[in-house]
Length: 328
Ligand code: AMP
Ligand code: MG
Image (cartoon, rainbow, N blue to C red; front, side, top):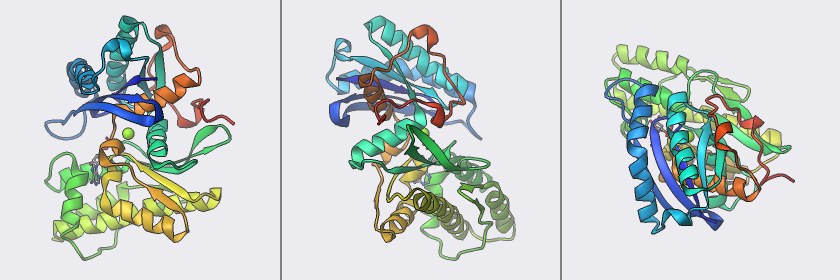
């Protein structure tokens, strides 16, 4: 089976084509970069409408496939920004109708788990999902993917992006903070906000800006922010592992591109005698391939929806989504 998947939950519009055994036949994506400040949902959606038709063409070309060879069309149904989701869903519906193929809804967070699970070969890993808008620890239990812990305020990526802009940089901040942090060495104390299996970042933001106002240089600030925030994520992941008696962790989300985070989670997991896997950065960030792959799993298990019932779900909860391909 060959499935085409469309991702459009936030900044990234992406089309992926995937075959059996998670063979990635092609990915074509384009990211919306706001001229300044944070993301404006309407403008990002306009960007997605503009680029998606060409991304579909590119994905088919790169996979050396004709449209008739696509067996199902999958799309991100939620969670995400309403206008952005609708842009991707509209293109997916159009393709499903034009090609006379089933339309398959996919939960974006579940897709991050499934692509990492397929690439790692791990049977039942826990996901640390660290992206722009989301920060969650997710595990499969009793027939569903469940959120065990999450951010109580903003997503870790949005936190890094906002901080970097406040420090005079530009979007996206995460990779720039990583470069800057590699030049820093002095750890300044910042609020360490772990509440059970949840985390919060706004206190670190305020405290970092206060340190900047006192004249602390950016490399040491970036270093302190990374060490503190990633230690928090590592701690909630470890707590979730201990509670659920698990020993496998996979990473997902754009912040999972970060080498310090990868190293910290790997050290923790291996220290417990477990295994950690991080997909290549191109598959940690939002991408159409993970939507296509999860769509393939779902479609193989009999999932599809009529176009009339395919409304997007900006607040779709991961633990309400059926995952019949994993049902036991
Ligand atoms: P996503 O929301 O999954 O598409 O990921 C985008 C987020 O990942 C943005 O907030 C980026 O700042 C962040 N990001 C990307 N690369 C890195 C990195 N190397 N270190 C930290 N954050 C990163
Ligand atoms: Mg994502």
